[in-house]
Image 1 (spheres, rainbow, N blue to C red):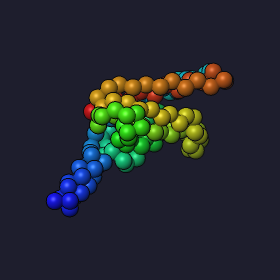
Image 2: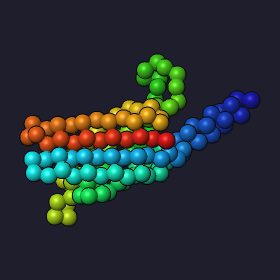
Image 3: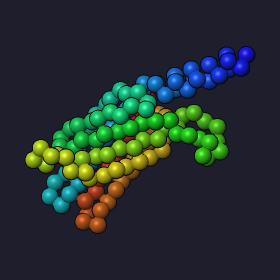
Length: 128
């Protein structure tokens, strides 16, 4: 019985980790002289990095399940999203932001990062 229970837990953990979701990703980068916008819809598995590239912006996004034990709540629909966002200038990637967020599955989440120079980066993502 112990082996069956352990096997079941392992299977459930792997099934949750390999779950495929659809992500609606919107990015906006505003500098003093221009605005870059990017919108994409991507399907990806939890735990696997995916890349979105449009209009001179490239985002490497790593979605994973959020460990709710840290918050002492019982839910399995929280996602942790980490990203690195680059602007392509003369064919080279220049890091402009590293947003991280915790979001509820199916909810739209956004974060805005503003630098002292006045540059702003807005990152919005919805997972389904």
